[in-house]
Length: 303
Image (cartoon, rainbow, N blue to C red; front, side, top):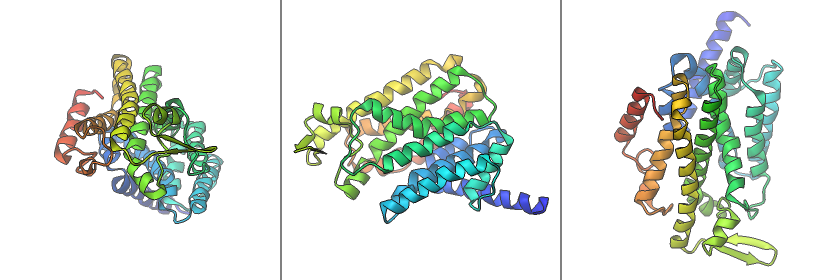
C-alpha cells in the first residue's frame, strides 16, 4: 500500500472516530475539542474506542452478539499491539496512535475486560457494593483518561490520581443516568448496589434471587443521592489535587466539568432519574451554558 493511500485511509479513520464521538458521546466531543492539537487526534481515537465498546451491548439485538463484539475488540487490541492490520476505522486510528505514542496495552485491555465481565453477568446479578461499582467505573472510564495522558506524553502521579477520581465520578454518574434505560430494557436496576438498595428499602429477596424494586421513585431518589454523593466525593478529591497537576494535563481532565453538570442536573430534579429534564440539552444543561462553562474552565486551566 502506498504512503499516500495509507495517509488517506488514516484520515478517513480519524474522521470516523470524530463523528462517532460527536454522535454518541457529545459532551466528551466538546471536551476533546479543548485538547491541544498535538493530543486531540489521539484523544478522539481513544474515546471512539470507548464508544465502540460501551455501545456494544446496547446496539445488539441479542446479548450474545453484543458479547461477541466485545470479544472481537479484546482480540483486536492484541492484534494492534502485534502490528497486525485490522479493517475497522476505529481500530486503524487506534493502531496509528499506539504506533506513535507510548500507550499502555493493559489499560485498553482492562477497559474491554471490564465490559466483557459486565456483559456476562445475568440480568439479576447485581453489584454488591458501591466499591464494586467504583472499580467498574475506573476500569471503563478512568482508563480512557490514563491513556489520553499517556498519548500526551504526560507523566504525573498527581494527574493520574486526579484522572482516577474523575473517571470514577464520570463512570458512576453515567451508570446513574442509564438507570431508566436499563429499567425499561430489563425491568431491573442492576447498577444499584445491593448494599445501597438494602439501605433504602429497595431490595427484594425472592428465595436465592435478589431484585431491586422499581415502584418507589422516592426511595430510588434516595439511593441515587447516595451514589451521586460518592461521585461528588471523587470530584472533590480530583480538584484537591489541582495545584499538583501539570498545566498540560488539565485539559485532559475537563470531563470533570461534564460530571459536575450531571451532578447539578440531578440535584435540580431531586435525584429523580426519571425526570425528563435530565435528558434536555447537554446532560440536562442548556447547551450554550455548558459550552461556555467548558470554555471558561479550559481558558482558566482548571477542571
